[in-house]
Image 1 (cartoon, rainbow, N blue to C red):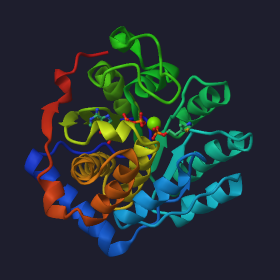
Image 2: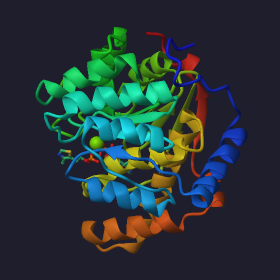
Image 3: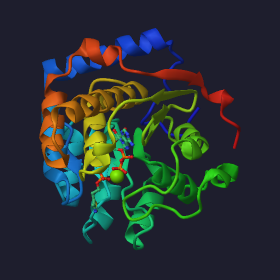
Image 4: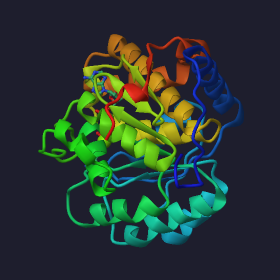
Length: 299
Ligand SMILES: Nc1ncnc2c1ncn2[C@@H]1O[C@H](COP(=O)(O)OP(=O)(O)O)[C@@H](O)[C@H]1O
Ligand SMILES: Cc1ncsc1CCOP(=O)(O)O
Ligand SMILES: [Mg+2]
């Protein structure tokens, strides 16, 4: 059990139960239009907001500490992405994480670009006190967070040792499995590792989800917007179900968009269309393999 109270460890569920909950999350978001405000990077802010709207959520991007505290109260869940930092984030990020914890609201962290400069490191260490309900990143980012939170143990043996290359991964998703399980056990929430095949864990179960398209790496913001969409689903579902739903939605939309486009530019537009048009039934049938996290070597 986690030492943190903002996220409650999810009970072990069968694959069929999880699929039913994923479909319910897709429907409930469309019916209730939940607000998932963001503190996110200036590169992909527009794409994050558009993806959140396409799945049926509502977006609001803020920068300042009192705005972060305000949206923690207003929204169903908050998204924090460290992609392009401003000096004010030294106050905004810890204040928003604290406000979410105080209000019992889930928040989603995308540690983009971890390792660049000192403020990102400082912020990841600071939010250890009020950790995210969902940690979402590529493999190198998740390995780096586990190291900064002192959870790495021998999980770093699996890593390339190179860390992220800017905002991109130098590690495989499988290499991040032990780090992901360790982070999920620490937060009591879920961790989603993205890549060709994505991995989602709540520390007890591990799901692998395939699909998507290599074209997702040819546009900026597929990872960032995935975090924003996970926050939308976290407004209506527990962290593990929310992360699974977002990843399944992205894999299906990526596949469909790749069939409809003629290159990376039209892929981005086709991807938003696919997000908008996906049905709950399709999401419930997304490729997903569920295993027990006890199969993951202990740290
Ligand atoms: N080679 C790939 N094939 C299919 N889908 C991919 C591939 N690489 C990344 N994706 C998808 O792109 C999205 C963003 O993942 P990723 O590129 O790892 O994140 P980031 O942009 O943060 O590095 C996820 O939905 C992931 O499943
Ligand atoms: C290119 C870039 N530089 C700082 S944030 C950012 C966007 C990264 O987006 P993603 O992680 O979704 O590829
Ligand atoms: Mg990223």
